[in-house]
Length: 334
Image (cartoon, rainbow, N blue to C red):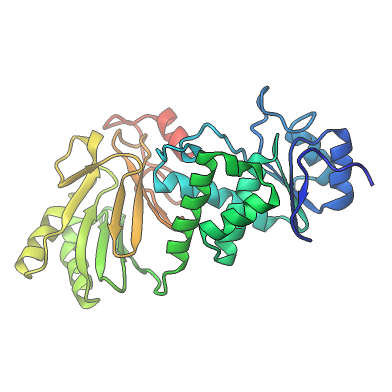
């Protein structure tokens, strides 16, 4: 058996972490592990193997190894907690997806083992329902060096808090997909079954009464009417829905659109803003290209994203008006 790599800590029969893998470390990995998650950026200053991820992939193959770069300078890993919840959730979810896809035992590695320890700690806590204080005590006793970084500890704590809140929900999202044939527009209704708060995305004037009737039939209260962009092929149903809410004696709903669109709305939102309805949240992503002010709305468990005309079924929206740009749309989608 080859010598164990720098910073090697064997945690269980299924997991271990380590720092940089030299040639002997690559041999050790091949002899002992079925899968490997590599976290380095592969830049000139952050390479955890002699030839970066290629060193691992050439031994285990792409099916049994994953490369998910962990950039310690990103906002979600700073002690100032400047990252918004979406950034924390998105980063954690990438690591969890990679780990779940790999055969066990898995080696998680980076340049020093610090990032590997943080990723394993967050993964274990989120999947075993362990609180942050408990998992931090474990990580400290195990010798994980990330415990000396306030930023990394904040990321682990935030990941646990956000994932726990999502997975503790006992009632599934109320979801309906609706269609307006004349403009071929999809309208989406989302609601919390407990609070009854609801969101409508991209309503059309001609079907606003249909949408409002559905809200009433389901016993919901319309909190937000959100548009992914200013639509050129139809008139939004937002204004009509506000009138219907008032006529029915319901609390007023609030209109939502991108701040850069120049349109009138109660809430003019920007990237990473959040629309909360009951225990659910929609995060705002800026996805311009079809128009300058296109938004996408991402559900907090990352199971759904509502892209408007930025991304269609087997296609994208046109880019020749309203500040559209094919190059910008390409970057938004990819």
